[in-house]
Image 1 (tube, helix red, strand yellow):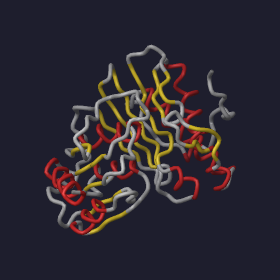
Image 2 (cartoon, rainbow, N blue to C red):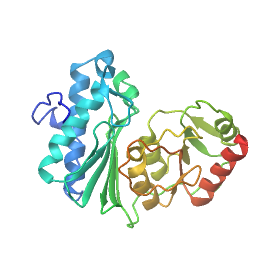
Image 3 (tube, helix red, strand yellow):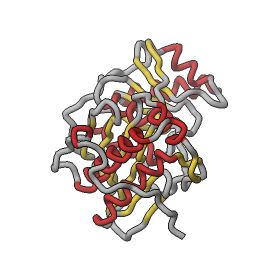
Length: 282
């Protein structure tokens, strides 16, 4: 049975000056999804407070709670791309199969807790997969207004810092959960460490040369929707995206699968981070 959607007002959802100026050169599916998500988030935050936005309104396809803000943003995206006939893989609805060769892999609000609280550290992030191969991605900073776009196999204008060693690096990490040894080992070697709460933003900042690396030091927090765009953006900018335990990051529609992803400015830095975490955990 299809899940009942929360009502989503017709566009424009918010004054045009608050919408991203995404050029028409971006794939129409990515462009439509971005505009829909950003509009829905701005409207929800204008009309609702933190408690209303973070309220649990159901369970996502992976079994984790769905907040009202997540639901509103996802519903707006589904409505916007439905006429385009593409498949959708998203955090709450799981895989929606329309029989298309093209799949939109999307996290409507990455950093939901931040977004609901008004902390300016949340993002919309999405990638396109054609016959299971990632081809294009876009991440939009919901508060900062910046956005990052790249196509697979096409060098991007943005470049990573190129750092090759963890010593002296600026790193962001997911907070430690059951095992803090890897987190502490990375923090001990890095020059500065941040816990920001939005993996999509952090990966985009690695691609843009702001952070040297971002990672999950072993908690298996990342789903495919969290990292698909990072793979395209960071690799196009000269960096590397790998799983801590060497697991494949190839396209999958299994929303319940999890990874501990390391995003780094270079392959040597990614290897140094992985080695540091795994040695600490032994």
